[in-house]
Image 1 (tube, rainbow, N blue to C red):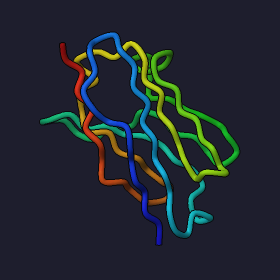
Image 2 (spheres, rainbow, N blue to C red):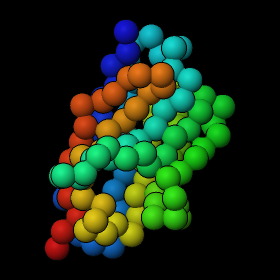
Image 3 (cartoon, one colour):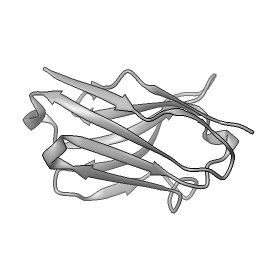
Length: 113
């Protein structure tokens, strides 16, 4: 079994930065990629970024590319999402994902002045 625990959410002003962390516990050898999704009220959960065990990355689209950076520390079983130039529309619950089918509990990110 695998458990994913997110850290780092909170309130930030527009234009600010925030780094989310996701720590994996358990049978982590079964995880071949990890990523981040988010879900805003009234919206579907949407993909943001992923990183494979080998370090290959992919991002949603231009709305986050250049502002968000995913990285991982294999020694710490941790994946990070560095978010810069945050906008109010980035407000959502952010979820860590471990392929093939593991999810964290989510952490709230609110961008507001």
